[in-house]
Image (cartoon, rainbow over all chains, first blue to last red; front, side, top):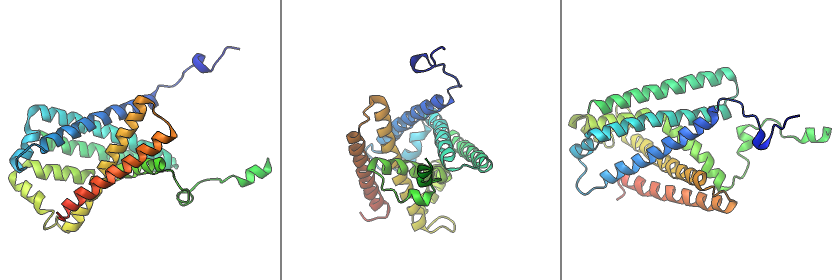
Length: 120
Length: 140
């Protein structure tokens, strides 16, 4: 009989688990760096009035970066919410409903955030 | 065999799980999820604040007045409470998340590191929440 364990194990599946896990980490790192970047600009000397605050996000490079972070947030939150639902919500119908709601919720929020960002 | 089958706990409900005394790393872990849930639920409020604060000077004054005069039928103290919940959630999720990334990257998985970094996470997020919360509610 051929060996099917250890390094000889026949790996099956589409690696969705690993992909989601990695995506959540990469998006987390992106958002963490973005947080520090925004904090750094807020903590610059001078009063934080409307012009300075809006000016932070009005710069084109900041817009593009914020856009990437908004998408990252949606993906990150989807992986996390899906994990939570898979752990605590066992009835398939209820879980499906909750997952559909989570997707709609996150897509709606993403659209709104992008709209706010892009009309600046 | 029949004896062990009898003593099995069976399905664990949340009410049973609450009776476990979690190690600090476990507390950080469940709070990581709780803070995620709060951030998820309050996401539209975050985007409303972003919208109001950057769109125009007029909307900016609507944003600042929400903390003084309230927002529609929501009183100002409730707006501040929601922001305080966001502050704690973000801080805890941020620091606990960095702790996870650090553990993933360095494989520093030991009981001692788990406990110490959990203490650090709880202390730092708690301290910063108190500081920012006091500022939010105008204590200094």
